[in-house]
Length: 340
Image (cartoon, rainbow, N blue to C red):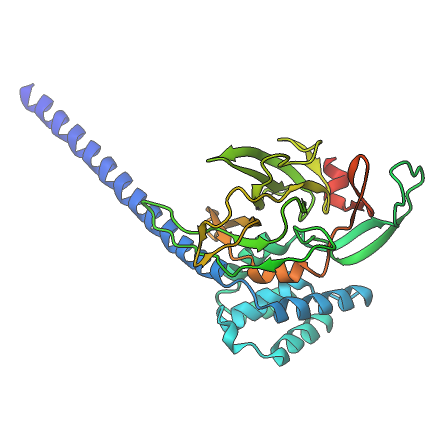
């Protein structure tokens, strides 16, 4: 009887140890896989795309749309990135033209993707970053006064994301992104600063929901989340006297180009990344959520320097009267109308 009890006890201990070791090894494996995936996507986030590639891919996307063909921005840049494995020093416009030609001739994305073993890695990243920044939208004709009753909209296709700074203001972009991260401590400058005058209005890059408005160490900040949850835009160093527009608060749904707040100077002359900044400025960041092939979600901050230059092609025009700023052109897209 005692022998049976001892045997059962030892068997229970052995089973417990087996389960414990299995779980420990699995946890370590998952952590190791996560870190490896994170490092890969962090490398991509530090060198997103050259400006000339974005501009050329956008042009080809618009041309293809006008001709009812299939070459789309995200597919073009993902195939190119896979071809070069993210090394944009190898970029040759002939390669982009060849990809566009094959897509427009009817070759499927999946067929071309088979040429590159790593295509899904790049597609996941660029899909998360750019999927709602280019497409169909509606824009109103010029609104002369706030009381205009009839608003006429035009349908367009192209870059529908906006520059974060409204039209008509002189700005300068800083290449001060510094994504130094380890897994015990985060440090770095997770965005790029935009030098601009105090009080200048900043706007929604795309349609979404204001997920946060808060004060952190005397600095006012706002976060805008895309409706698909893949992109979060961070606006920091807002004007302490009037950081946000009157209607803006947590939970507010906004359209692309809508006024969010005003640039401040409370954090001027502080070290940001590799530069000492002159005040005032807006700190602007993008954080994206990527799904890996293991269906694991990873969040990384993106170097926005070239993206900010790209978005200069589409700026929100604001006018001002005795009641404050108002939009000269009202923007709508499918995701805004669906969620508003």
